Amino acid sequence: MKILVIDTCHNSLKFTLYQMNNENIICHGLFERIGLENGLYTIYRGNEIITEEMPFENYTEAATILIQKLLDLELVASQEDISLVGYRIPQGKNVFSKNTFLTEEALSKLDQIDIDTSNVKAIKETVTGLRESIPNIEIIGVFETAFFQDLPEESYLYALPYKWYQDYGVRKYGTQGITHEYIMREMQSLFQKEDIKLISCCLDRIGSIAAIKNGKCQDVSTGFSSLSGIVMGTKSGDIDSSIIPYVMEKEGKNVSEILEDLNQRSGLLGLSEISENLEDILSACMDGNEKARIAKEQYIRHIVNYISQYYVLLEKPDAIVFTASIGEKSPEIRAEILEKLDCLGIKIDYEKNKHLEGIGKITREDSILPVYVVPMDLELEVAKAALKLINR
Image 1 (cartoon, rainbow, N blue to C red):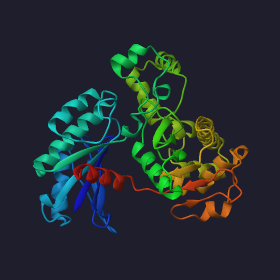
Image 2 (cartoon, rainbow, N blue to C red):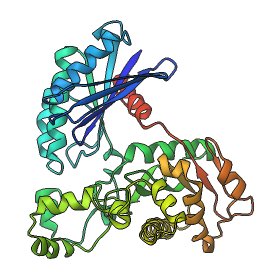
Image 3 (cartoon, one colour):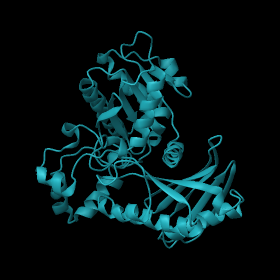
């Protein structure tokens, strides 16, 4: 059984094709600069890279070309060889509380997710292209926010006029729920109990930290959108909201332009003026770059602050877990975070932390609080979620 996983954002369409019988990747790739000049697609098939410059007028055209390329490269025998599409959708607002079939009715409801209107347009166009190529294909929306729908009210409500929540749905929705839910299930299995208390640290270009108890999320660092929380690659994380009108007046910018600055030109990139990539920041730190040092230190401080806050909220968790690209692959950052949490009784095993491959514990046996690293394949989890819904 072949499942195609789709993810669209920032004028691009990312895809992975899985053979679900053995959960192997058949191919994956990216369509870039959709609707812009100099469009480009890249398909990775094993060690082979197929790439071509090609204009894509919209996502419908990109999706249609994708299916055709899968056929031309004999990655699928026919259109019907793709049994299912899992579509990762970052925001479901209060409209979609769980994963759902992207029927015409569901697509019409996407307009109510007015936090990110550009991505709603991309989803609709992509679904149109997929259905033009495979008329009877089932497409399932897998929502990153579904895991946070039943946060406690004291966690999801903001101290704002209650009318804003009632009339406009202004509340905390969170991000990266697919990852945090996966971490919860893995640790429930490892600890062999359902009522586990976890601090889950998903550290990537976009990052979030979640407090989980008894199978439910109690709080998460990201809020109404992915902009709040910890410092990220290009996102500011938590800031004083009065900065926005102040800089608008100083620079003569409108709200959309300021939000673009906060989302695309802030975070590690904004502070360091070097890169959004943490490896580049660490390299610049080694060269004595002061701005890079400050960016790294603020990144670590934000993470430490949230872990400390959730430690108290959970009344001492059973474990802290690191995942995603930085969480999995940066032992230096993990060590610096945990060293600042020494007061919680965390004792790092530096050898394990440095040389760990795969899932494992990176603290000593005398550590009061164990810390784990758990790798995950986000796209595979989207495929599994789609398959689970179709098999109900």
